[in-house]
Length: 314
Length: 278
Ligand SMILES: [Zn+2]
Image (cartoon, rainbow over the protein chains, first blue to last red):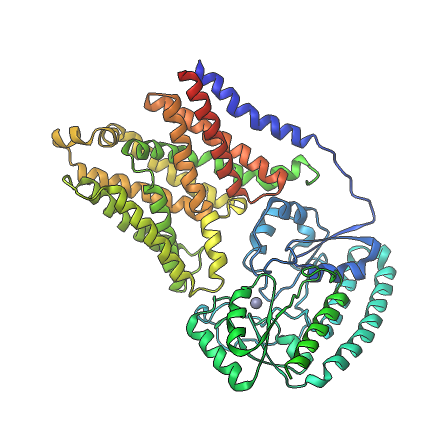
């Protein structure tokens, strides 16, 4: 008898909680709006620029989260299940976490090859494409370095791809998307000219990064990444490698270290103490740092921070 | 909170739910043995050794999902199973078995850290191995494990009397001329298979929670094997439903939500049990 009453308690409580939960309000989606899911906030920011009011955009990864490793949550599957469009970085950036989520979400609208599936890396000239593949060499992406949104020229290409796909998914708003793209490109041109001017005095300047995640930035602005704190991409820095980084930095007079919010700042600080370097709080995701909600704000922030530090350490 | 649509809820949560309802019964049964033997941390240690085995496979260049990495993990875990059955059976022992279990856990955990420091994204991999990915469990994974668990359940049901005796009264078993050492090894080997296959979908924490919490609740509420097993199943199912609901409603990591739900149920059960005694 006692067991029976206990059965009631333990079975009924969660069921009650469940039914209570499921009776909550249902919000029907407004008709013409397309639901866009981006894997990362930078892609989401671009989608907002191009889509304007005709889209509703969500990012799966948080701005402060490592885009290589995102923890699966039920909301991710729900969001993917309802999406009309999925924008992924591609080039294996999300390979560790997106495929199982997509399998659970079962949504043909965003299946590979569907108009609703946008792979940002398509059409990008990839850097760091390895000649040989070997897991022991670290998180080497077979298709090249996936951190390409940091280069504004690449962003221009991706914005065009996004506009194209949006128009396919929702032809009624195609004109709006084209107009937004045009506006975006014009704004980008103005900004890019400023950024290039800001960075011009530091041609050939040497920088150090935590991960291989600023190679596209370095190429665009003529900087040289002389070392990364990770010996191999994705593998935590070892003491021996850090010693080598320190000696390289001293020999080459590199005195700026770029670190993203999810990387280990303490490691960078340790190295910086030995080399009289400055640790810069960089981010590639809009919103990771206050006041950088759009792609332009983020790049303004990055270029200003970087040029100021390079000026000081010159 | 996410606006709820029952169909979507069902689609998202059905396989995790299936895994959390179909697989724990055997875990609960093994948990009852472990509680009887007073070697609670044996499962945590075995789960950690299983993870160590997976890391060996990763380091050898195999993928987590390769079949071979399952076999490597199982092989390594059998080693620990042999160690545990040996350390229990050796009669006059100045060293308590709990010490060996504890040391196994710590060394396995440290070994995992060392190995993953050489694997890309090791830090994140470590967290994933601990918390598992029950949310993304596939139909195939649930079916495979259910198949293995049914076979093992038949094995344990057939020899339940022997296993019950060596768990609750090993001295009598020795005195009766039973080959305790052999049966003990069979017990730990079967245990290892269960732990290795469940850890790979559910992670170390959830595996440990399913093995121990329902069993401990059952011991507080019932006396005989069968009724304890029933109570344990109910507790496991309740923790699963509660945890999955919380995970969905509050958008929490699923495995960790179920573990915390188990803890909550344990508190409720122990309050109920002490009220009943008073
Ligand atoms: Zn990377």
